[in-house]
Amino acid sequence: MSNGPEKWSPKEVWRRFRLEAVAAKNYHFSYSLYIMQTHRDALLEQLLPSLLYIKAVAILDEALESWLAENREQLPPSYRNDLNGRIQFLKDKELLQDADRLHAIRKRRNTLAHEPGTSCNWDELEGDVLSIEACLVSFNLVQPSPKLEYYAERSALEDSTEPGVRFTRRFEYGVKEDGRKALEIAWTQKLSDA
Image (cartoon, rainbow, N blue to C red):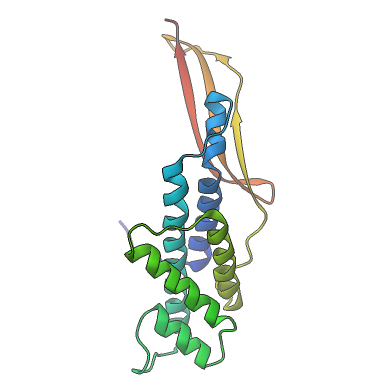
């Protein structure tokens, strides 16, 4: 039986987002586990950065809203209760250093979410994610991200004792934080006798 929903943690949500974004950006290296070469998919190259961009800005919005609530800061009626209003309120209270950059990011998110045919690329995403992270760090909502690196591995074929299966091979890819596995996607391939 659950005691209710867990408290939303900007730190954990942001960490998970950063891990998933690195894994997504490097999806093309996973092909080398099977076909010994990489391949960038034109559709994924268009969709993934844009979807991740929208998610990053949603995290920013939720984190700022949480910060305001935890610090008993109420938006006056002259500010809209949305990301635009939160950014402007924090700017006007001189609590936010790079409000113009965050407004530009917010507008870009709106364009991606509401205008068909728009997209962003990996470099645009990464630059704006770093700006979002700097804001979240300045409010002590997250820690600066550690060194993140993608990895992909394939084991050698191993004899199997499972009936009807001659060999198995383990595949794994994911992201390491400061050299330690933090996000892991793994599966086992089974090769039959036939």
